[in-house]
Image (cartoon, rainbow, N blue to C red; front, side, top):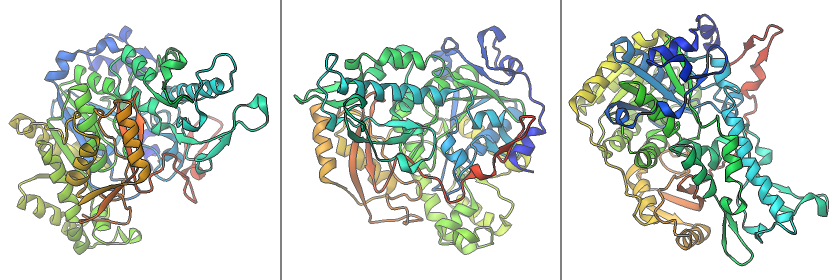
Length: 555
């Protein structure tokens, strides 16, 4: 059975029943049909947030298909609920780019899913569309100001870095020219499209405290310079109010359910290789306000999503996890141990052993933050006892808790041991969160702290463009912002071909983008792009719908 087949066997509870499990009056939620609802900000209790137990799920460096962090997060929340711990899982919303591209849907898998999976994977409650419209409104207003002869700020078109966005993988739109067609069709200039998940509006939505904070952050978006070299922000265009109006519903977290009928909150969807890679601060606080335990995930490996979760989101929101679950798969270890991608289903104990340095580095990274990790082996059918034993032996030698997790096949029952490990770690009070850097450090010091301590680089080099960006950051007095480094997820380094645990490598910062509204800087390394492309045979080829509205082909 496919994930969609399994999802279709479940009789969904009405969303009002899910709200009742969180002790919510049905009149406090805003229903989107029978199985989805928006949660108002008034439900957030900051005192309860401080008492709640936050658990972060991350992973080792992944294979191209990912290692199942979402599946693990959902399954862990099911397991904790089975242990009698009131738990909510808080996740990101899927982007249509990966859904129609190579990775497919992002609602978990097997018997560890959030439902209704078709809605969540497609348009859901319209949050991505609202973010896209707000972003493109600003782009339209910028170009209109360039065209205007009366309402003009004197913007230098050559300095405008604000692109447009769409929620689709479309490499043809990475670099375009707009304004062709004559004097009434705009000012010709080079620009392009990013994917919506990489929009600064997405980052802002996911870091904002409330609507007032959202509007302030929107107004602080850096646009470029005037001809007279004065900086221009979105607030100078008087557009932040209209942008916020478009986001009036999108800023509210979405309540759905797991396959076992437990609550799930899903909100926002920034990628972790080019943005902060975690759900919204509002959604996480909502989960922590309404539950004793809150499980959340951060995209890609611990070098990306987890680092940004801890250094940016946690410092910004004043929260921190009491335990971190490090998801590992046999196939990823074999891949980082030298096995060919085509042969990952074949037993290869030596390759698993050779891949252990990657696992070890991610464990060290978590421990550097002062948090106790638990290894969760996400079991696949092709895994053998001998391969699993390699990880168990490694964990025992390093005094790390480890659990073989079978949530894809068994749901919450497959995560009971992991859930108990997490409960024990939290009860022990062994985690004391310490960020990798403080925000008041020099920009280069912050970049180098992450590059050397987390990635394992020996040095960092900056191109001439990056050095020019550093001067701009200093001139704009934005040096105290944290850094959200854009880097390949395929390697600890900025070179996707360096697998395992590379050493003695150089991180090259190509340029540094300014996300003043979101409240961070984006050093771009290697060949990172903010608009992905589709594979030769995208997932969209297998997706269909019949006359009765039944969707097929979503995985």
